[in-house]
Image (cartoon, rainbow, N blue to C red):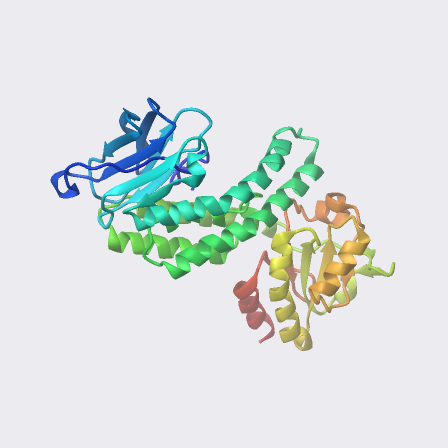
Length: 388
């Protein structure tokens, strides 16, 4: 997915408008810019053509203006790059785009420019500006991750969990755009937000529908484009990796015993629930994706608890008060909540090979694992099969 999107450094935008012949007289688009306080600045126009990035032209700001011509009006993603500390500008142009005009001034042009003549480029501008505050919050976390050593496993997992929590809001933005603008090719850029920073172990398989939706729309509206093929290839890769993760979890046929204390200090064991269908749910109060999934788990518990289903929640919290508060806040009404309050050093997490959360194992009445990482509709479908 990282290849089909522009490199991560491409986060914002720059440039302006000027006159000349009409767009009908050139084979592609005219990109005109007015950029104050940037006389003589060199600007490079790069096109994303499939998996390649091709330099189209290089110009200098003259009398506060610059101008590019693209070689085609067909759908392309373009990047405007200029020197210094300024962020680049990302454009998405297609046959509907006309007389692209960008205006602004240095410094800070990438955050304060205006763009006209391209609705898709405006969508991308809004998206990148939305990401700005999150990007600022994420950078110290990424910097800390880069300083970690192989021995810092526990701290790494905690930092990744923080990033996952932040990314949920970005994910919602992308899904909202794709849902409300089903024919928008800008959705292709936003698909990157559906990847949890911690990796595919926390990827929601249901999100593949958004990949399929964007690919189908682009294929219909831009039949010549290679972008849909790249999305399809990503879908195949994601499915293959998810299958590998499932197979890795399936290597354990029978759920190992878990014995820990509940919030009141009472010892509870997984084997106490023999005869019931049990969802062993690894989670934590600080885990954003876990908290997002909790309403689904609550719904399944309320629906199937009278048919022999229950939940055995194993918390990777280290703060008892926050653990208890999260149980109450999320209405996790089943009685089986345990934790060693030892974070990622939880003995159960080690035994079950849990290196990211949420992580769940569904077991039958004999303790045999019959499903891993089933969420939302997938969990409901499996419970229907097992419990009717």
